[in-house]
Length: 175
Image (tube, rainbow, N blue to C red; front, side, top):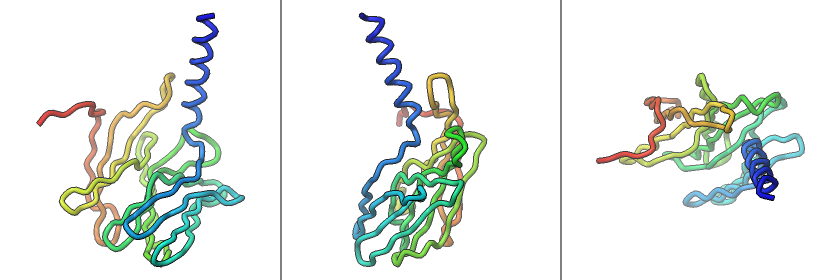
């Protein structure tokens, strides 16, 4: 009986790990706008804004899918970020960000490629400057393992201004 329970738990663990790129509808809140994240019939990511201006932005093409982790306000623009994947494999994905005007115009799209699987995961406010964190991962027998992080800031044109690579996973820090 214990062996059956162990095998069931092991199978559930593998199913959760293999479902990394599963899609789910989400809602993202900014100060004055709510974004609904969904997919159209072709699998393209849709960001629908409801606020001062109402608009919908479509992200993706036939062989590339966008997965949005969050939408934030950076200066006067919205920035949606996450990762992109080609349709051929879950073993490939790169970090991305898309800059959107308050009227729904896509101003800038950037994919950030590294020698590992990468995903823009978080944004932090550091003295009024938005710092974006990218997780860099590898695939192991146990699943995905984070091997490092990259921090970036954007300039006024919303291109990458500064980059800081951290090669080891930081578990604790002392000040």
